[in-house]
Each structure stands twice: as structure tokens, then as C-alpha cells.
Image 1 (cartoon, rainbow, N blue to C red):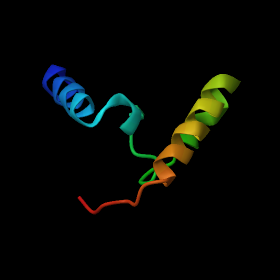
Image 2: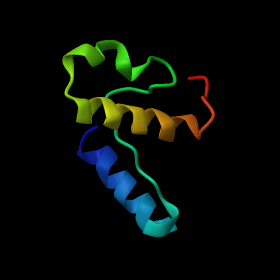
Image 3: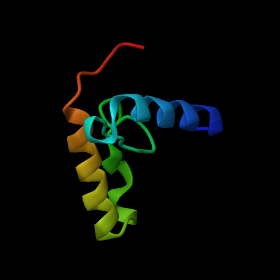
Image 4: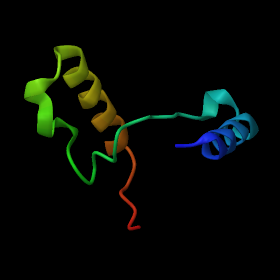
Length: 65
């Protein structure tokens, strides 16, 4: 994500209000490819973080791109 995308995100969150926005940053969409494919090489905190990220993404329907 570059500067332009981050600025757009900032403007959108400002328009709707911080309390009405949720931002989840992940290396890729875990609904398309699990984040746990390399869990053996990660520290425990990272495995737990990726599980949290996956749960957040699961709240939203997958859209065809």
C-alpha cells in the first residue's frame, strides 16, 4: 500500500468517523489463502496475531475480483 492509498484511507475514515471504521492490515487476504502456511517458522505471538486477522476477515463476505 502506497502513500496515495493510505491518504485515501485516512480521508475515508475521517469522513465516517474513527468509531465507525475498522482497519485490518494483513500480508494478504486470508479468505483466499490461509495465513498459517508457514506457522512452523513463526513465533507464538505471530501465530496468534494471524489467527486474529483471519477472524476479522471472516466477518466480511469474500468478493469476486
